[in-house]
Length: 269
Image (cartoon, rainbow, N blue to C red; front, side):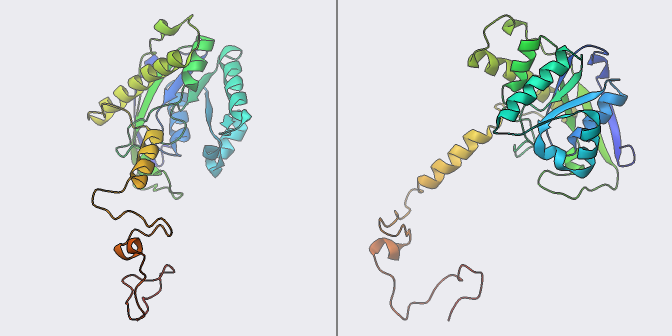
């Protein structure tokens, strides 16, 4: 990694040298597993074990490392996701492993690349095992391999900043039933710690409310279903929103089209 990155590592003293520990990290890029593993192994003196969605492990370099080091891929939307959490719990309790988890479940979709609203699996795992949760924030991988692209930009070397914070205080939730409210609140505490660390790295103020991709999707759908003020309502029969369509007319034989055909070819004369 040193051939293509310039590292700025901090907070490694917050990572326990032994015993089970969860490292909860933000997710910027498909290159994250490599940069985080590098940090944890070299600076934190711990062997990294990942639980991440299966797609991360399809990257050839990542797959080669993952298959040889006992990493835990998660197939989303299947019972294998539950199995993955069971495997992570065994690794934490039985093996005293250091397990890296992306609470967001996928690379951030926040326009500013801030951590998003997270899923509650990390809180469930932390509260059921009792192991500490160390927040881990990083910045720079988006310049190495931006999400949605397959070709990394290796040169010039990219600066990768990474900071681990003190374990998140979850004492308020210990010994309480793992209700949806408890898990949601504990997860929010974990994500606040990660976001605060990233804000420190970036020297910027994070959004007051984390980006929620599910809510954003619902808002887009609602906007699509609710036409703007003054817009022509769709024709009940055809769905046409043009003035002609709404009036039930299609234009005479001399009417000229005002757009190119759907196949992208030239407009007919």
